[in-house]
Amino acid sequence: MPEGLTAVKVLVTGSAGQLGRDVVAVLERDESIEPFAADALVDDPVAIASSVDAVGPDVVIHCAAMTDVDRCERDPERARAVNATGTQNVARAAAAAGAHLVYVSTDYVFDGRSWRPYTETDEPNPISVYGATKLAGERACPPEATVVRTSWLSGVHGANFVTAILRLADSPGELRIVDDQRGSPTCTADLADALVALARDRRPGCFHVTNAGDASRYELAREVVARSGGDPGRVRPIATAELDPPRPAARPAYSVLDNSTFVAAGYKALPDWRDGLARLLVALERR
Ligand SMILES: NC(=O)c1ccc[n+]([C@@H]2O[C@H](COP(=O)([O-])OP(=O)(O)OC[C@H]3O[C@@H](n4cnc5c(N)ncnc54)[C@H](OP(=O)(O)O)[C@@H]3O)[C@@H](O)[C@H]2O)c1
Image (tube, rainbow, N blue to C red; front, side, top):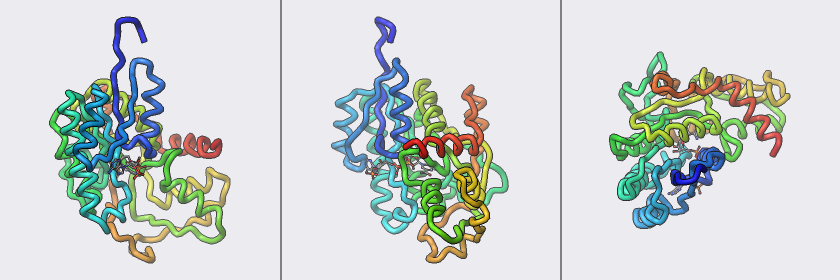
């Protein structure tokens, strides 16, 4: 840190989550940034306000959320408290501290009926409680905030689709995976770099940011099994309607996000999802 300059203070909510941990790791590598973890519950307005106030951050990166889509469907009140009201609490606390807000949102704000990648100007129409409460979170952010919609996250520190497939692949038998949900699998380490770049610039607006390319859940599972030395022939495609028992929450059939606004704003496109997956599998192997 050059003498006379003060570090940019960046506070991260959800810093123990899979994305939050990677965001903190990226912040720690930048000597012009001083990272902080918010330990308060975001649905407790007093606690989150005093946690933000104690740090006095320049930027808040809000990664905390209730992310279990089926749990949100079963407990909509809690989902609203955390994802919608919780984000409002974080936005208010950030505003009181004069901090820029970066909010992480989701492809699940869309209904999945599109035939081409969704742009930031497409009308959201969530089909699940999770999607609706995350969209309410977006609407609780001030216009100058950065809102980043992303999709299908997997990281070293989380229980996610990739780690679930690796676990299933360890037991005998078929892996029956849905082939009628399509999205862009995204590696949290790559997304963390993008979030920190946007945070550093305090860039206002909504941005779709995912790894490049797209896949169905079935195609992703085959790739995970093949790349980890298993037999991809064990993965069988099924329709969502064949899931037994059916999942409580509906998922969009197609939720690929068009990243061109992010790239046009001068940021580097994230690599192909297979590249991110390859690095994630190596990192998981090393643990
Ligand atoms: N996972 C995905 O595929 C995906 C896709 C698109 C967008 N996103 C968004 O990306 C962000 C990060 O997701 P992630 O995958 O890193 O999820 P994650 O691993 O579940 O992390 C979320 C973190 O938020 C914390 N949290 C939950 N309720 C809280 C509360 N009331 N107050 C404070 N912290 C709370 C969790 O703590 P506990 O574990 O203790 O509850 C966890 O540490 C979220 O905003 C999510 O909506 C995720």
